[in-house]
Image 1 (spheres, rainbow, N blue to C red):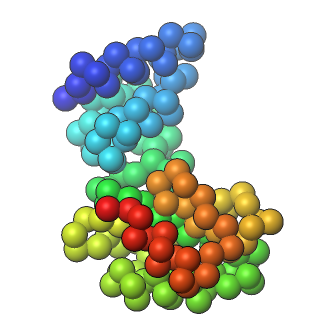
Image 2: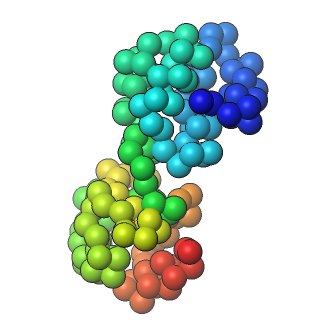
Length: 154
């Protein structure tokens, strides 16, 4: 069930739209901020609240790659897989991250600390290669810097 806190935040966002469905992305983001991801059950309840079908809201939720429809770790690492980042060495960095964390792209560490996901573009080609952990963007890291960055997320 949607919590009173979630409903209050969602209703505050919906006040900015003529129709409830107009705020569907913000509503999905609110649920994800509270729960970490959006389950099928929550999506169906939210769709009903927004006067949408679960299929309509589901199509919105799967279009945006920063909305998670499966459980993720406490910290989500988005690795930019654009040509710019790849040319600038993302392949080697990704290999190092996978080895250090013991997971591949699309997986979560056994302790639930990190989920490693590809992202087509993080919009920082001038700092390539780049990755994002939660909402923190890191540009042009090397292997040593990656280790220090990861150590800062518990």
